[in-house]
Structures are given as structure tokens and as C-alpha cells.
View: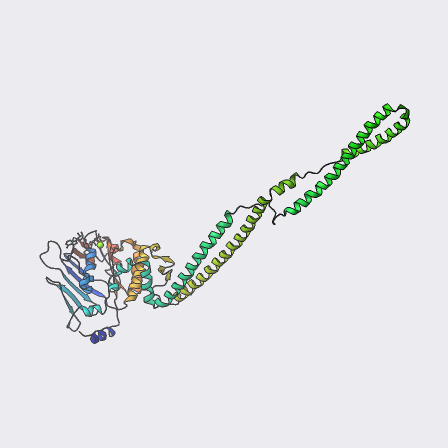
Length: 446
Ligand SMILES: Nc1ncnc2c1ncn2[C@@H]1O[C@H](COP(=O)(O)OP(=O)(O)OP(=O)(O)O)[C@@H](O)[C@H]1O
Ligand SMILES: [Mg+2]
């Protein structure tokens, strides 16, 4: 079938393609399994561990995806017959693999034979392989989402801008921290004067005090002189009795003067220069402290400038982030609440590793679906991580989306449409479930 007819075939087909029926025999663990999934919602393939549940999904992937998805050892151990798969699709196409070489046979609704090319036209790797999306790096997940909503280039540009600002801010932040640390490490002397002390002023004050002390010294000398004269005069009184009268008068007068001088001298008090001497001695020390205090003030000012700059960059980063989130909020998202933050996919503000297992499945289903809208089914392994309430919600969401989910779950409960045991499938009708549960439940409509 040529490219033109494939295109015509697809454009005339409005409904996404779904799986109507799977028959698989002698593949890996499977002996004989039949699955007839519901058109919408979840069809759960249940069973205990190691019974062949995942193998059923592998069979679908192999049937549609071709040799790239061929299991390394497809034939069931102990089987005399080669593996056989028959997959019926909702658009009427039947895909079969059978025989020793697992030859592909594709039959279109008009009965014509076709090959892998026709399958490739509506099935692509991601749509088939949800686990592959789930295992992609957070960055690759984000890129996939942006591709789906057509914003890859614009968000990429904003990401680059944000990264640039972020790097710039990190550098400024480091300098700011260093400056702050340097300022903090410098010692502080709250008692030191704010300006450098002048030595000449201290010396002047010292000289003034020394001059006053010199005056005192003269007064002391004067006192001593009078004392000496008094003694001399005493001797004169002794010696010159004749002149006693005059001498006594003179003596009294001098004695009086002496008394006065003596009293004066008692009140004399010398000022100390000790403190100034200490200050002069300490001048280098003081000035070192003043220099240090000034350096600290300068360092603090510088640290503040860098801190202001850092805050400015933070504001710019936030503006870019807002621009990006506005862009994403305005986009046609496959699931409300999806976004890209710091180049990574988020859902309801949570990064992939912070999402619950069921949210991860919901996100993956929505994105994988959007990648290939013509593919109406999604395969999901290991759905046991959802409890029954979450499973019910998820199934309802799948139905709303018009999506067909074929999922495996380690369970033999009523939520399973079929149960695989020892490589054989049991359909819903054959599963022993309590009557009230069975009434409310129908295969493929979970
Ligand atoms: N070629 C084969 N022939 C027979 N058995 C096989 C073959 N290849 C794999 N197996 C067995 O199939 C089992 C796994 O099958 P599968 O992965 O489908 O089980 P499962 O039901 O999905 O189990 P789980 O619940 O652990 O995921 C393993 O026990 C494995 O040894
Ligand atoms: Mg499994």
C-alpha cells in the first residue's frame, strides 16, 4: 500500500484507533490468552506474579511495533508450536504474527494485504511505550510536553534567559557572601575614636600642663628660700641680741610671710600627665583600630550593595518565570496542571519524583496520548500502585478522554477484566467474584 492511500485511509478515519481483541499463544509465559478490551476506560489484566500479565502487553507491542519490539526469546519454553498473535483493531485492520519466523500479516478492512508501514502510520514508539516516557529524564519529559503544546522554542529561550540570570545571581551571591564574611571577621573597637588621633595635639596639652607645673615649682622654690631665710634669721636673733627688737620684728614679718606661703603651698596640686603619656604611647594601636573600623564600615557597605544586586536579579528571575508560566497557562495543555519549571515537567507544581505513582501514570497517559492522537489505546504495566478509589478515578478520567487503557495489576480482585493464571486467561464471567460486586462491574468499563 502506497503513501497516498495510507494518508487517505487515515484522514477518512476520525476515531482514534483502539484494540478490539488480542489473541496470543505460546509467547514467553503465555499459553493461550484472549483479551477483549472495553472501548473506553480501563481494562485490567489481573493475576498473581509471574503468570504472564506483562507478556500480554509485550505481545501487543510486538504485534504492532515490529521486530524492534520482538522479545529476545519469544517462544514459550516447552511449547512445540511457535508463538502466535492475532490483534484486531477498531479500524478493521487485523495484525497477525505466526509461523516459525513470526511472519507479519496485516489485513486491511477491504481484505487487502499490507505490512509494517501501515502500522507505523498510526502507531508510534511513544504511544505504545508509556513506560519509556515514564523512565525518561525529567528534562526529556518537559521537552516532550513542550513539543506537544508547541512551545518548545519559546520556553527554551526563556529557560536560557533564566539560566543566564541564575548564573549571574549565583556569582553575585558568592561575592556578596564573601564581602559579608570579610566584614564580619574584621574586629570592632567601639571605644576607639571615629577619627585618627593627632600626636601634636596631645603633646601641646602635655606642654601646657608641664608649664603649669613649672610655675608650681617656682612657688615651691620660693617657699624653700623663705624657709632658709627664716633659719638664718633665727640664728641672727640668737647672735645679735642687741638687734633683737628689730630682728624679732623682722622675724615675725618673715614668719608671717612664711606661714602664708606655707598655706599656699599646701593647696598646690600637680596635674598628672600619665594618661596623656599612655595615649601617646598607644597612638599607633588606636589608629590601627580606627583604620579597621573604617574598613569594616566600607566592607559592610559593599556587602549591602551586592546583596541589593542579588535581590534585583531575583526579581528579574521571577519575572522570567512568570512570563514562562503565563505562556504555559495560555497553552492548550493535554492535562490541566501540567507545567515546566526549571526545564523539568511538573504537575500541580510537583516535580516528577514528588508526584504520587497514580499522578505519574495520569500525566504519562495524557502526554503520550497527545503525542499521537490517532492512537486511542495506552498500555500500562504495574497498576497495583493505585488503590481502588484512585483506580476508579483514573478509569473515569480515561473514559472522559475517550481513551482505551489496557493495564496489568497484581490482583485477582473484581476490578480485573481477565485474570491470567499459569499462562491461560480467564474471562470476567469465569472469575469467581461475590455476586453484589459482579453486578456493578463489567469488563472494560471499570
Ligand atoms: N520463553 C519463556 N517461556 C516460559 N516462561 C517464560 C519465558 N520467558 C519468560 N518467562 C517467565 O515468565 C514470567 C514472567 O512473565 P510476566 O512478566 O508476563 O509475568 P507477570 O504476570 O507480569 O508478573 P509480575 O506480576 O511479576 O509482573 C517469569 O516467571 C519468566 O521466567
Ligand atoms: Mg509484570
